[in-house]
Image 1 (tube, rainbow, N blue to C red):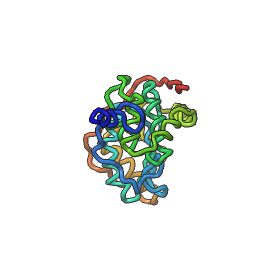
Image 2 (image 1 turned 120 degrees about the horizontal axis):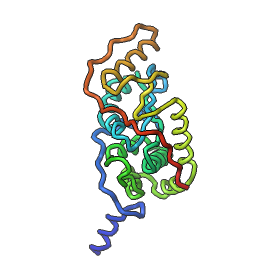
Image 3 (image 1 turned 135 degrees about the vertical axis):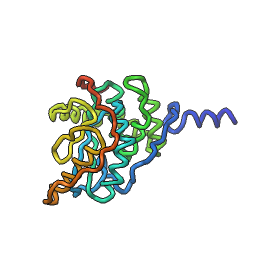
Image 4 (image 1 turned 60 degrees about the vertical axis):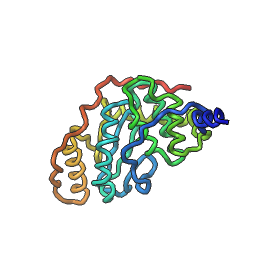
Length: 234
């Protein structure tokens, strides 16, 4: 009987081995999440975050910077953040992006995305395996059969490839790239980001640009790897 219990715990609901996960320090408030966006659609500042799941700077933005922006701007209705795929660092980037979109079909894109970034282990190091992707799905209580069917299909793969190609046309050349109301943010320093948001809010409200928040230490320079879009796995 003990052997049977251990086997169930190891295999889990997804039919594959479980992977130990690091839980994000702060999960985004569910009531503010809208698909691959968080915040009001009517917010005066609209931020697109172009990111790759293996990009270290993207991981820092997700775990350290984004929660601060949510608490400072999104909760007040002043900012809406939308995640954009720019999966260019390898097959694991594409696989993670597809998995996050599949989680989104069950209303869990944002939290799935947060788990992936919280569990980075370097670029192309074999971290984002199918076992890992399934483990995150189980952790979030997804229907793992539906999740697996989505992974095996072509819809999510094509959507990731299409958006990555759209990013190339912007052009996006490194990640994370932040665009606020159509304007690229000059750097990833927190004070520069908040200044861009404050200016966008002021402009949308017809006022003069608001002074930026005090500069704070931000994430390291964005990845400068050459853009090579991986081909979706059939």
